[in-house]
Image (cartoon, rainbow, N blue to C red; front, side, top):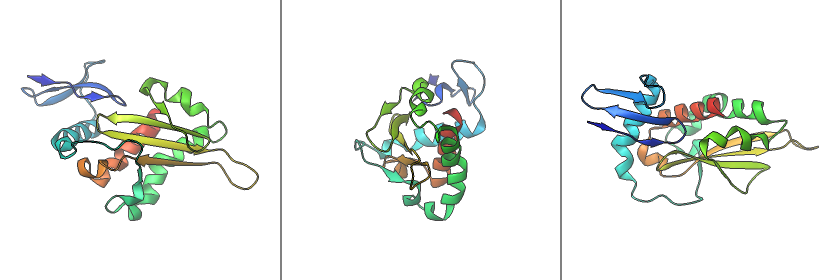
Length: 164
């Protein structure tokens, strides 16, 4: 028996219960361990969220322990995106094409990505000007608190930054 979660940001994975494995549908290779953990945590907890609220976002700092872990999260997830797009914030639209990202009306350039069916990630870039340096932020729909522990959100943010 197998199941196929719709994981837009990662591709599609098949869970083979009889073999106790998770395999990438596109490459037929076993998923990386941290992907497996995210997928299993998502499947175990998604039923805690009956409905998601559109256009509602929280920062990593609002997660349990997020304030203390934010500097590490910023280095892992926000800084790589900023470094890549600080001189061309609009380039994120091209970088996110394979994720079916939606443009959001905030910052200089903003996108929303469906990482999992009930998990959305917003990435907002601000262009530098005479007063301020370029900046970036990553936000999540509030329901993420009911599905993932803070450590998983940090991993998810890092993967997202790497794939963009």
